[in-house]
Image (cartoon, rainbow over all chains, first blue to last red):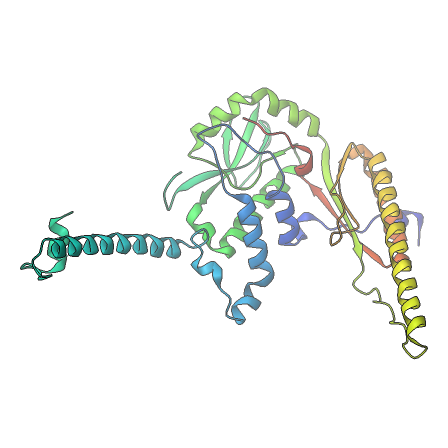
Length: 125
Length: 231
């Protein structure tokens, strides 16, 4: 080995680095901007953790039937839609239960007035 | 920025005003230029898209650092639009110009050293020679491994000091049980590269006999040396 070769270390250019190596830098380090309402910093710790898990194990996990991220509202816009829909349905159910409770306590023998439950709920919003 | 489907400008970094770079949204300030990328927060729900955006952020900084000093900004720093970035540049003009001057002609190199995958796991002591002898051997091997780890930890500290001596600045991630033996970042000026390369090559030459391997990656933008936050 020549003296020139001895003084040249084995290096990897960052463009050939793994996504894990890149994550170490762009998600964990670099300037952080604080104190300005016009600036918003994504939850990078969450991104780091979840992206790492997904990179490392997405294929394996899905093969094993593990797909929690698909229902995690922080990761999936579809899950956020389902969460909103679920909240709306719960509110409607509470209104219906409240109305039925009122009818029962008014002494009409639990009989519903004319019109569908949906009509009654709408009329009492 | 609030709500779903929000397009925003993700700030990537800051370079001198004279820097010429293709393929980036540029926001000019006084003496400095901000590099930005359009980001759709909803798209980041998709890990593939998130990975692509992280790589694009990194690639833009890597292109910049080849020719210019650059202040790298953490991925995920969102502004509503260029006007807000311009105001931020104006407010931090002095600090950014100072950082760019400090980082001129310098880049970050990272070195990790860990146990080689090919290193043997060791041979279990034979049980045929009696329980007492077996336990004694186990104990002796445990002590030997602990001594080996201690020696390697001291060597890692020595290697870090050797590289720090030929760098402008250096930081080391503290070692833990499951971490690399050495995880260091070094800010190296162009004029220091021959000395740094020589030291790194010497260290790498020592590793195989110790059952260790290394990854020396660079040149990175100075991610580890712009720790102060800006307002």
